Structure formats: C-alpha cells, structure tokens
Image: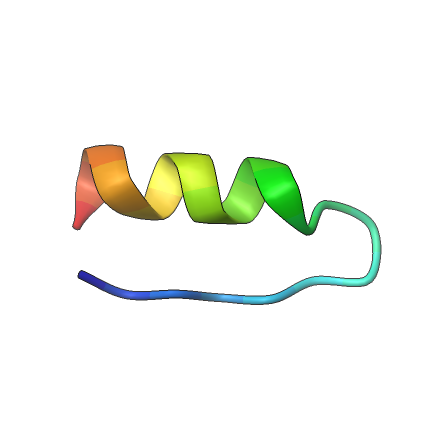
Length: 21
C-alpha cells in the first residue's frame, strides 16, 4: 500500500493508492 501525497490531488491519491496498492 503506497501513499503518495500531491498538492493537486490529496484525497484522490490516497483513494487510488488503496486500489493500486
């Protein structure tokens, strides 16, 4: 499970992280 934080997409990144992670 990877958690990548981005200035543009913070919550979306976490959501995708769970799907891809």
